[in-house]
Length: 97
Length: 97
Image (tube, rainbow over all chains, first blue to last red; front, side, top):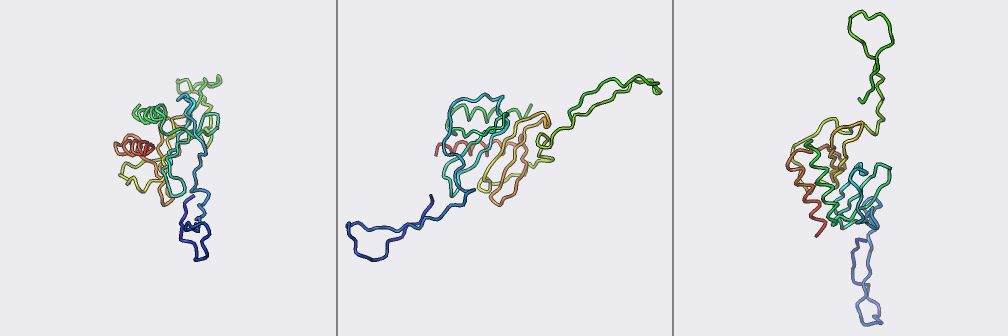
């Protein structure tokens, strides 16, 4: 969670370490990561109907790649997997067909 | 619209041409193209929060590239424009940051 930490108010420091009070800014639902986990298991191109690329943002620091399959399921893909990059390149190249 | 045409029932052909009765299969709303027109006017990468790539499908024969901007607006992009391909490549390359 994005958060802002400020030194704790002056009270006896027991552990000798400066304790910080972090005011954790609650991140609105839609800003948080939609993908809790990702798969790098290959999914055939023909079964994919769309791919949604969501840029990193305050509530989610990584790129999210969400494929919607023709059976209606949505799957979070590993944005670093080579086949994911190839699938997106193939989708874009089909624009010239 | 996708359609299936069958020879018209036998009735006096006045114009001498075989008339066809086309049973036009009505394409469900969600299958049709979401993009009526596209823009090839450059949109700065920083203003884009996500890009949705929708593969061609029965109701829409072309690739659709829909950008959602940080101001909440959605814009249909020209999938053949060079800068659109570059923006998607940049998004994917940021996966390794």
